[in-house]
Length: 237
Image (tube, rainbow, N blue to C red):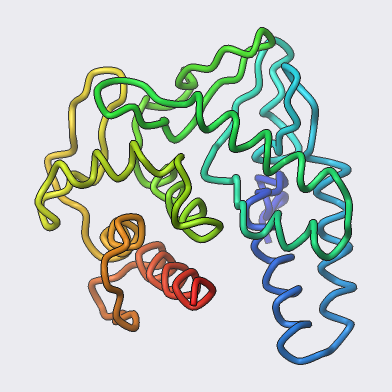
């Protein structure tokens, strides 16, 4: 065995959030309190280790280490999983979860650059409250940020925060929607959305959704997006 088989020991707060939410849903489905107890342990750890107040806002860091740079935070707005935070608020009655929702939505309302007015995958929040694309990553709305409209739609399909997403997606024929856009230069990907990315597009625009068809063309991420979109549609019914 390698001397350090797990080189990256940092957590991923979106993964932790989804696990905790899945456990909470399992408790409701099968009435087994062990699932809820496990969920509560994860959400308590998230609040303790990844939720901070910065620039007058309460935010969830992408992980415990490496994202608080003193003069700024590096945030990934696709980690703002609003329907999960709402479920945690209903479960625990802790105001922290509701504050995360309201502050997260307020921040998203200020994240938008270039002609598309869309956020980048990674965003720097400065101590003075100003935001800009984080310099450590390409300034693109791409495979991370595509989850933003997924979670917004899941929480509220009529959210005003979906407006720039709808406008940008509707500006292209469905099968010619670019897979990403550089929000600084307005350059778009030379290839188009497919699979799970298209599923998120269709959900965002309120277009009809069939049961997910997952085949060999779908990698793990594409298949996951398709399944998450399907769950979102079930919850909206």
